[in-house]
Length: 146
Image 1 (tube, rainbow, N blue to C red):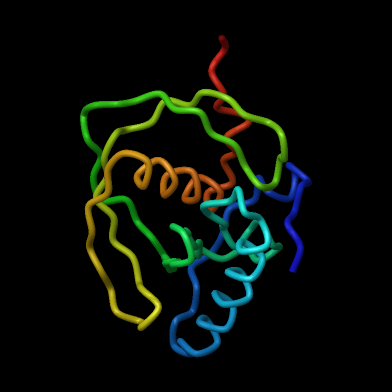
Image 2 (tube, rainbow, N blue to C red):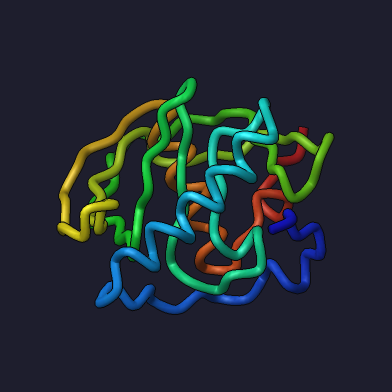
């Protein structure tokens, strides 16, 4: 698996992951984690970034990673924050992006169970960035003018 850097390919919307064979999904997650682990500066990777147009992404904090399968943001905070974002698909490009400060998220975890969680701060920012990838939205198109 290699990281896609072609913006036209990354602007395509993803379809839901078929979770009837969770072992197959787990194998895909482990392969994606290998790609993410090879980039020490990366904190998240969406399936479209490795050429898989399915609603799946992973995040990493230290050596621990989490998988988010078929994620749905079910709520946003009213407060927003501006933060600097970059993307493994566009090395060296960084910009300011405004996003809600907190989100509620429904997703399927690695064990195949549906989960509902609240995220705020940096974690909420990373999750929203990766969900944008699943919807064909790129941070480079959201960078605010300085």
